[in-house]
Length: 252
Image 1 (tube, rainbow, N blue to C red):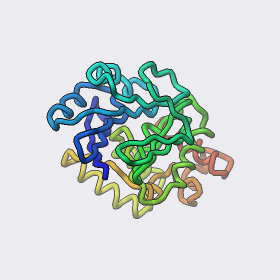
Image 2 (tube, rainbow, N blue to C red):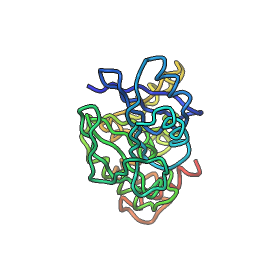
Image 3 (tube, rainbow, N blue to C red):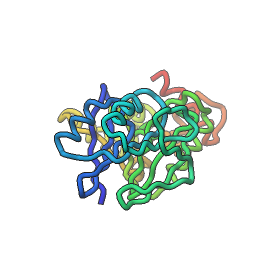
Image 4 (cartoon, rainbow, N blue to C red):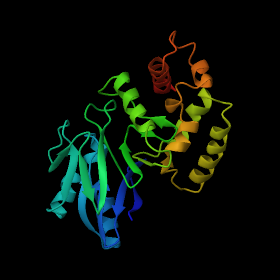
């Protein structure tokens, strides 16, 4: 049984810590080493692996220092991206063993060209591809790549827990409400998010089932979403709807 803890970093990053029952652990996307090292010391944990989803600095900035402190650590990362500290390059279709659980690697290009995700134990670590009520910006890839990556995630089981790398939920919900003001599930979620953030609590993880109800980027075939972007695109296919949504969000 894996236990997941969040280690906040920077303004809104989460470094996810995956712990097993005998004080060994892994971290996902450690953009900063300091909060990780203090957590490991405080809880007397040994770092065995680092999982990287993509090369942006707020996801890998702490890796070199963690490797310095734990020279035997296994650094897993995308084959397709230039990350000098990676010891175990992986790509979609590969599998890794993590504390007796098997994690599958998914290729999720769009935000960056070589972005990957890790799925195992009904948990998805998806970096900056899927957020609660939102999705990542398309920086290096194409809209089509990002749409395909989200479609791949949408096919996972509904109970999958989504561990994304940023606390962007409140601003994403504000955009989702602009897209679907009459979505009752979204209204309920908005109130819950406001309450959690007011108490200084995380809104993550979310579940895929919930995201299918409230996340406009996973609802490109919903009539209410299509209607909202009708003035932004002449086309009605899901990719055109997604592209119109993402461009709207960029300026929101």
